[in-house]
Length: 403
Image (tube, rainbow, N blue to C red; front, side, top):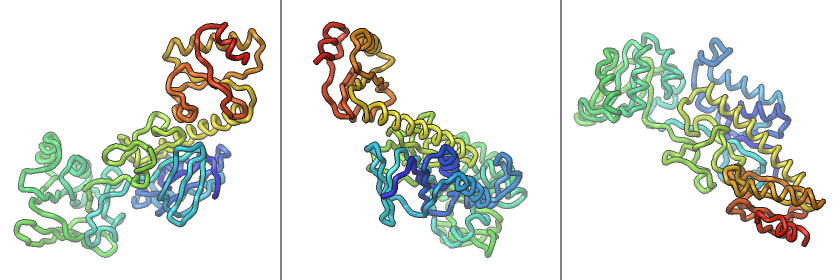
């Protein structure tokens, strides 16, 4: 079993940025990635909106990210995480190849996958006319004919964005004429957009082309008739799937779609576990926003690890420690803190008081069985000696500390 300060699951722009920040902070950093480095960004043939890069390809930009991380000492392995245990101080990660790793903190940057129709040509021409993100790729189809697959909010709204660049956008819709799955406002705007056309009661059978998209084969689901339509781009908007299925029994909170909610530091509901990039609940899914996520999570993880190390040094390895759990929002909790400090100081007791904000350290509170504040326990090298009755009475408190 190999031990690390923190492990990043996923090698997309968020995970790679986290690796840069983590390794630069002299933390032993590992990136576990099952696919191509860069995730969805790897499939983007041109990127022109990443700061400092006038024009580059997705694979090249992601390679630059990886090299930057490696320069600072980050390690990479190609494997798939299949099982995790995040409920211990040392987080356990198991991979498909049978390897086991532990880490003090874990960053989840496993991204999303477009829901595939698995029709001929779709995967083969991905990145060569087949795309899944309008804000990433729409401008590369300026003045060209584009086909959009889907009729939900994402498909119609992204289709209108594509129409700003394309000569014509043809939307393939399963339903009868006039029926879309998107909201009414977007539907009205799309119908009034002169560049947007609709083919009803139809589905796509094949993406045509050798090295680049040249057209699509469309089937009318009512008549069974198949026709060909020339185009230079095909955008699939039939849904994205977060790659978080391996977290189902981990205790990590996820929404109904499998996306992970986080706080401002990218931390999940479990301390020391962070989610970044496309697999978290967020507004914008772009390389630049993913990089921001990775930087934030890495800095937060670094501070979390520092706190763990300090706790070990100042609590677990020390004698006569009073671990005081308090809440800054509860007056009684603050009052007891004042009384405890006074009694220990004025009577010369050889106790070190270590304060723990229970709102920030829920797992630590659970570890010591603390459910309310104020609560205080006496430890000797990490072993619980006794609990204190947290009364706001100096005499009673003094009698407890003398025993």
